[in-house]
Amino acid sequence: MNPPNNTNDSSSSASNRAGFLGSLPSIVLAAAFALWLVRHPSGANAVTLALGSAIALLVITHLVLMSRTSGTAPGRGQVFAQLLLVWLWTFLAVALGGLLMVAVHTGTGTLLVSTLNVRMLLVGAVVAGYVVLVLAVRYRWILVPSMELATGAVTFPLAPEDYPTISLLSDGYFLHQYLAERAKWLDDITSAPDAELAFQTTRAIAAANGNTSLDTARKALEGSLDGSVTLTPARARQLMQQVALTTLGEERRRFIFLMKFQNQLCVWAFILLAAVAVFGAFGWAGPMGVAAVAAIIFRIRDATPSGDPKVYDGGPRWMALLLTPLVGAVSAVLGLLVITALTALDLFSDTVKTALGSLPGFTLDPQPPPFSGFVLGAAIAFGWSAKLLDNLLKKLTDTVEAAAANGNDPTGGGNADDDPQPGQDSPAEGDADDHQGAKDAAQQSLEASIPEPTVPEDHQQ
Image (cartoon, rainbow, N blue to C red):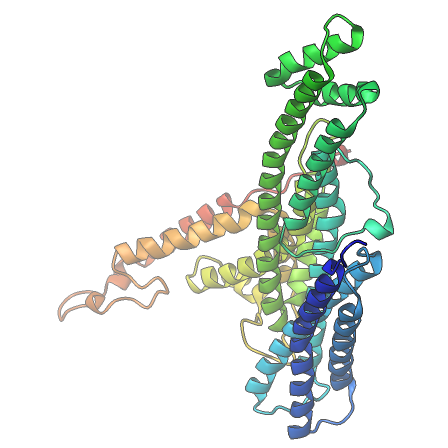
């Protein structure tokens, strides 16, 4: 009788322990939220119901995943559950952080239905949804197809019982799949009967095509098929193993580089999303929204596949498409802040100052001033042109550095040493025209540095 196998029991208990430890933060969060409501009674309203429902769903989802044993294959439902956990945790982190800012700003911890509280909930929901979108697209249409190309196992779409769990940044699963594919190929070569080596030989020849380091092995295997070369089964297996180890080794290095590249892009997406969350909490949603749409519209051609099937990009165009609206939204806010700084330096006319109006800044205003058409138009320009923000930042830096080198106040406040001595004329009286001429020249230089919009060729009809 075979000895009892306790592998499944031990792995199941380990999975249950990991699931329990993973559910502890959600339970602690639920207890803390309940304690907050006890100390700051707010009654049942839309804000408390939204937060309470999200926390309750978070705990339930964790418990459901914990109840699942590790002996069964990861199903598609588990993947969706983990994506749901990502959305819930991100939403709660952003929303609760924003609500804490509001509580500090207003001096009260009561969760009422106010403009600021609702804004924080909306920002949390949008940011969480985009995080899930990035992870889902990154996994479904970038990592899995790339892994299948790297291993030669083109079996996409996966069956539900083979659908793996989604990992945020780890590439351990995919490297494990690579190692499993290599082991399976080597095992097929070793275990194939001598009479059935032709299939494995053909597979090895196809894998060695185009690899100059395997020309000798490929020609020997081709000769064994057409009868021009006589190989013993043992020698044929050695050549096929050489092909398998060499080709999969090269694909492994390429795939590890791809994983690192995709992880870096994913981190950049999360950093930009954090900036979007902060700007959205302070009321910059309008300019960011139009800039994001403009970025997608005007840059969609750069993210379109070139149509060359030989290009092995591993999905950078997908990540570029996901990063484009984030870059446009953040660039719009930064660009408008730079314009505000440049108007303070008198590098824009009074007309621009009037059209710019009052911007939200970084204060929690329940009713931020409405954005003018000039502000929204400038946001569209910043979302469309990557060079526009660079040119404005360079102009701002040059202006401040030039003023500092001359010992002047860049805001026009002057310097104590510039005060006229008794019996001397004020420098402002003699240099007023020169100052106005320098101001006009600086503004003309700034306007010249802003690129003119270009119209695509197919729209010049």
